[in-house]
Image (cartoon, rainbow, N blue to C red; front, side, top):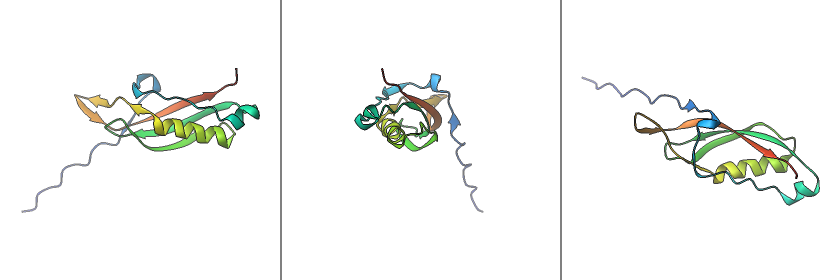
Length: 105
């Protein structure tokens, strides 16, 4: 008699950015060349965070229009550590869209 395989885990949920907590918060680094060129913009990065709070997959879903700023946004997300998202006490992976803003003062 064959034993049935356990059901696959549910797909990761998408969590609003306002519900996300950080162990290591995002620290945006403004590239010096972008400052000199007066580049500004908003970058939205969609990131899959694993059950331990580490970013696993990410992609820019809204570009600033400047490659250096987009790359800096991705580097920021890679260095961020998230507080694990839990349901019923069980940590689960989740998706979140992180808006990152590059504005010159």
